Image 1 (cartoon, rainbow, N blue to C red):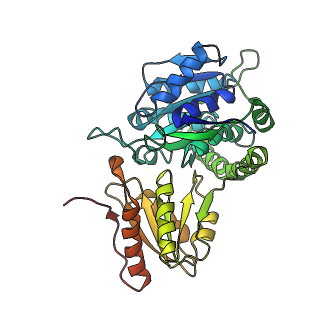
Image 2 (cartoon, rainbow, N blue to C red; image 1 turned 90 degrees about the horizontal axis):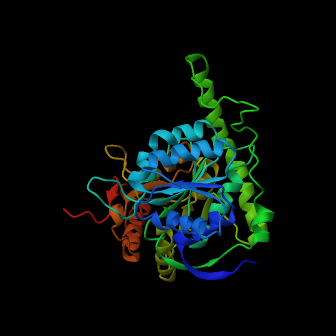
Image 3 (cartoon, rainbow, N blue to C red; image 1 turned 135 degrees about the horizontal axis):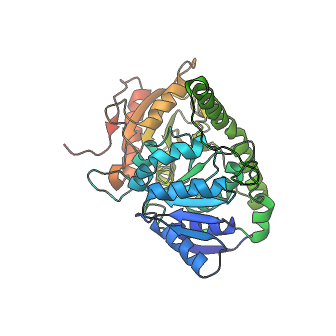
Length: 391
């Protein structure tokens, strides 16, 4: 087993990338992601990581550089947040459409305006349809493990897609936690060297990203979608392989004290651990309540969501982003779509919580539960609620 040590989560993410023996890191600093790439630059400068650290003038250029390096056959890593992720938007489609297995850590942060450096999921939800694989982690150990896991998945010849590992800015990124680092032997067992089937090579030329005329564009989009959907099997397999190596098992959808629950919270990311405390206290008070957590976001785990939520009385769906002018939150919308058509479909009530870093407390979860219990008792289903908004 590896060494357990107290470490800031952002530093742990950087050292997981080092353990993956990345060849190229190209990134631009942005709060609260900066510590990740800052530490990687130190590891390269101090000779601990044999890699090229490419400083650039913007996140747009950082992602462009990543596309070139991974296409040339280099294992490539980057990280960003908020407006930086938004500035990458144009190139994200190119990375996924060209099937370039870049791994990117995203310290989730709210978008401007007004300027906010604090956490919510608005940044990544604006990028949900860019064709990247996307997962959410809850704590430092999750984050460390999933950087190594992400390379294993993205570079698989049956996948060859870029992947985002989302972790909450400040709430997770700047917290010091006890992390179990992988040993070099464990990394070698789990992660094979990057061996791309196609690469930029003057002696064996390939065309990357040519013009897609109307006669072929539709088929390329279909192939991309099929690749994204098909990647789930490899993701699940890689989680099992990770468990074999380090003893921690992850799943697309995970449950906490939900086996007999009539009412369940549905959450994603670091807020889930606060929700667990609320579930513990509600259980002690005799309430049949549990928690279902989404780890996999793209491809969306329809089958697992149906299995975890079907047959419940009420789902309390908690979003960290607002689909402005739309139906409420993006997670709740997708969950409703997944449950549509079930013979015993639960009622779904929606809360938009923690925007711009607003605290979401154990007491807040208990208030959400009371509203869910009222619906379970036959009360009307309310529209979505912005939790704690001041009149």
